[in-house]
Every structure is written in structure tokens, then in C-alpha cells.
Image 1 (cartoon, rainbow, N blue to C red):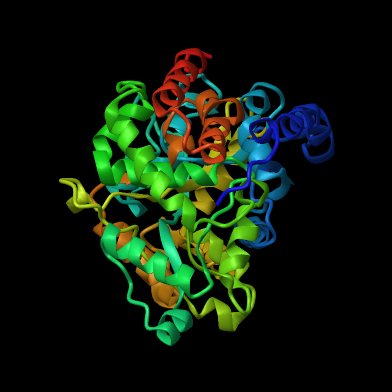
Image 2: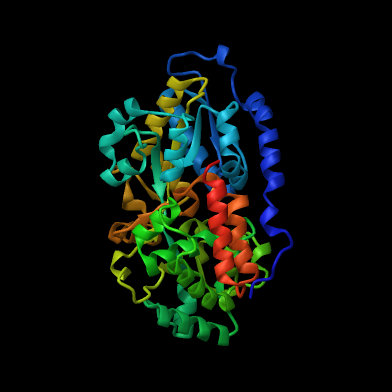
Length: 435
């Protein structure tokens, strides 16, 4: 069961303040003053990045190195802790942002485009857009019909497991909720943590809410709930939390004090401690031992016997690069974006971090791992792809003072009065959605 952490939902306040306070130093340390930059494509471009873990950080560097060679640009990457970057993005974009920055498709992209904080890049898309599917194009189009981001890759949220364990124990991959919980019971009997779970940073739990809501209530209800068109007090939402209550006995102890990386290690340790882990496939970055990396497989979250099973809904967030409205070198930024849009650049990134699949049509998939090929097939087979709770709703509502903390409140006390709890979420929406 989950062990509560004192004041868990306030944990990000210090990180956010530190990031905001550090904006000026980032600008001074990494950015070239506007007066020193050429207005033409070239010179120095700054790139603000949330790719702070070792593997994705190295992967981004590989892509940038390639683009420096191709364009003649000098690219300075300013890396900030992923959570701090997300939580302080508004202050960042309003202050002195980098020319280009890592960001996400979905509501969160459209929101900042509507705020005039992201610059449209239709001229770049005119050159590279033919190399992307309509689905990617829609995901990076703002409410005004303009393009605001270059997608480079995406990944599904799935249940990961170790093939060797399943073979040695005679476990069968479950496809239904009943099979899933029966397998979890068997793993518990066998002395394993059935499901690794870690939510110190607040956002991992969002993925579980998303998938349960899509499985039980369908993709459209989920998006409408994220947009405030449905109420958090709806009995349909109650059904989600009631289903989640049934999973909690299978979770890791002390989950609210553990990072997702620590959760991943419970699956990837030798001997392994956990039988399954529901997270984005980026978790495979933690498998630094090639033998363990090749032992990892996954299956989609099981269906739950509802009319929405056929949707095969998933979270498959799209990551990409956007141009700051306040970019000091916008033409250089656009040249970098045009390069990062190519399959060749994305292949450089994927070669270092194979936990994603590329977005461009001309990405060379011949070198994909078995997991990457399976990711691409799963995403292609889904009829309902969400971006993730913190990308599909209002940023303030998704943050530490919104759903991050509110979900931790549920996980700390899952047997609380759900009606009162759901009302607290609705109250938060009513307050935070207008910020």
C-alpha cells in the first residue's frame, strides 16, 4: 500500500521558485545578447530543455550536434529539471526565454499559443510539413489554425514487464481487467510487488487516471472533462476512483516518496522486485544493462468490458520543439527547427534514446528495437490517442496546486469520502482554470 508523505502536494514550490529565480542567470549564462546576434539565420541559438535525465539529455545533444553541422549554427542548450521546467513555463516564457524550447503537443501547446507566448512557424512547416502525418499536423496546430511546434517523437503509456519472469513463472499476458487483477494476485503470492508505482513528482499518477477514465468512460468524456465541459463530481468519475482503489493494494510501499526512476528500478533490478510497471516507455531509459533492456516487453492496459474497449485509447504524448515569441534570434531558431524536423536528425536522437518512436515519415525504422516496433504498432492501432492529463488541460489546474497534489491526496487516503474529494477537484478547477 502507499505510504503517505507529509505535505507531499507542496513539494514542488521550492523547485518552481528556484527555477523562476534562475531565469535571469540562465539568460546571462546561456543566451547571447540580442544585439550580438544576427537577424539572419545563423549565429547562436539558445535551446531551453527539460530533457534533464542522462539518456534523453545525451540524445538531444546528439540531435543538436547533427543540426549544428548541417546549419552552421552554434546551439547552446540550457537544461532545467523536467518538473521545474513544466511548472514554471509561464514565468519562463514571459521573462527572457531561450529562442527554441522543448514542449508538448495538445492543449498545453494551444494554451500558450493563445497567450501569444509561442511564435507561429507556418513558414517552417511549409518546408517540412509534407514529412508528417495529418495526426501530427493536427496535434501541433493552434486554435487559430497556425502551426506552433515541430514534433520529433512520441511514446505510449503501457504496462511493462520482463519476459524472463513471465516465462519462468508461467505468467500469461492479460488482456482484460479480471485477468490483470488475477495476475497481480498471483504475483503477490509469489512475493513480488505486482505493480511498481512511484509518484513523488506528482505527474505519474495522472497516467493511471487517464487510462482508467478512457477505458471506463471513453476518450471524448475524458477530453471534455479535461476541458471543463464535464464535471469532476459526475458519478462517471466516481467509477474511475473506485476502480483505482482496487489497484492500490498491488502498488509499491512508499510510492509517494519515490521517483519514477526508482519505480522503474523495481522492475529492472536483478533480481527484480516488481512484476509490472505502468508508465510511458521512456521508463526503459533506466535499463542500462543491455541484457535487461532486451528482456523488457509491454502490453496495453487491459480492457474493462465497457463500450469503449474498441477505442483502444492510450496516452501517447508527442514531444517537440517550439519557438519563443520573444526569441532573440528567431531566424536562427527556425533554421534549427527545420533541421530537427528531419528524419536524419530524429534518428540521431533515437539512436541514443530508443524509448521513443520518431515523428517524421522519413525516420529510418530499420534500426528500431523490438520494443520500438511494438510501440509504433500500438500507436497506429489506437483509435483514441490522448496527450496526457497535464498536456490536455489548463496548466495551472495540472500543476502542483492542482491535480498533482489532488491525486496525491487520493493516494494518501483512498478510502476517504469520494463525493467530498471530487468536489474538491471541481472547486480547484473552478478556481485554477481562470488563471
